Image (cartoon, rainbow, N blue to C red; front, side, top):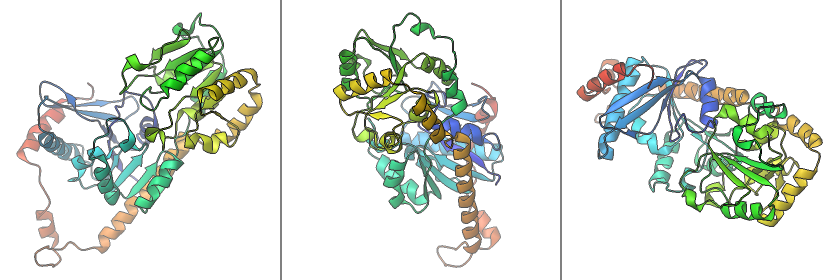
Length: 413
């Protein structure tokens, strides 16, 4: 089915390459995709649009500091009206990664509302108090809901009648490069082996105490952390001579780092913020051919731990013991089993399954709309087509002014 997408996200397109980028890059091959980010501060009001090489159009509102939330919402709503008009968006769906942006789009008239729930955001550090209420509103309006893992599916399926578990997948060809010779990243040259590595955001979901304790228990092992530090004070990171924080790296660079590690790890904390996570890096590590040790995250234990593809440990002593075992064991048999398991976990297949469900939701909404007449609220009588059209909102003069900003923004930042 032919439909465009307007996507609202709390994650920046250029932050960490993860679920939104994998899915929307594939969506953009056959349709227009507009990725709306949260506002950034600026001296004057403007909206920047740029066409990413993936085909996705990234849209970033910029506002002066001090504007009221109500004014910001009004300006974005007016700009969205202009976007829909100027881009001649007729058959489009709206897609949300955060319920916090739901109020921005309530005035739009999409063919379907999609909620891709990749995390339980209300459990994260600094979560806005109104998030839970806004998610309830979004769930009432959504035509289809996807979850990024099975635990989230179990948590959300009672709140909506059309929820589908779409666990994060893996680009096996990309991460499989780590099984072949790769140039050694500069920071690793001269670093002793064995090496144990982590790739991903370092935030409140990380068990920093366990990380420090394991590094102390295994002083001969070098621990390499690749990823940005977010929402926590870098000064709180444990410091050891064998613990190395390299910062974020691009998606394209990751196989080279994995190629020069001996074991990969998932040292997550067991708390509310990790209760429903389904780490994308689990299958990525396996595709790279690395032994994996993880704390008992539910969506890692099931299925990876239960199938013997990942070793599970809940404290520093057992985590260190699992790492030592992983370093000494032959990985070839586990790799063979892992390859069979992740063979059916491609992002292409996940996107096709999601696209099919979105098409069903659009068809269902259209069918219901043809069976339901428009009513005059005062007289409870069907409206004539001309009267119904007269009640549709028209762009305001402010929206017309924003059109000049939109048309002058060009195709790049």
